[in-house]
Image 1 (cartoon, helix red, strand yellow):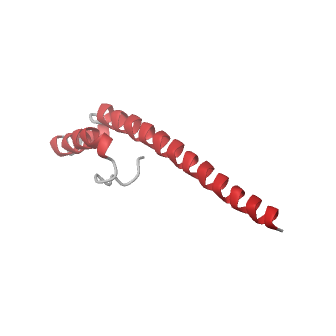
Image 2: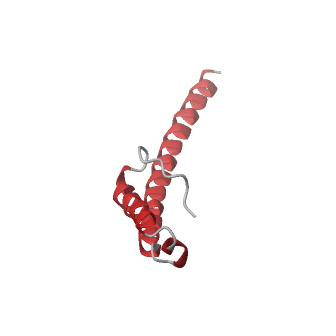
Image 3: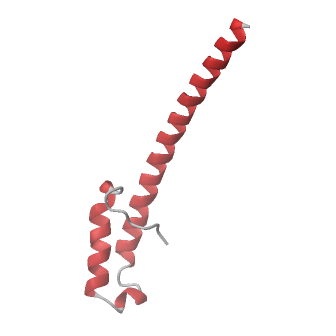
Length: 80
């Protein structure tokens, strides 16, 4: 199961999203029998890669923010 596919947020996976949607349109009942699984697996892989990239970026931002906060506290402690 994948999250809601907000196309404006998932620019790197647009082709995989469109491929899966097209398969579902072309095979309205076949999608229940695995006809679209290759497209779904490709989309899941793309979403996983995007999640990992976003997670790494968020972790780097959190580290930088934490470092700034620690520096401010260090300055406050030195003033006292």
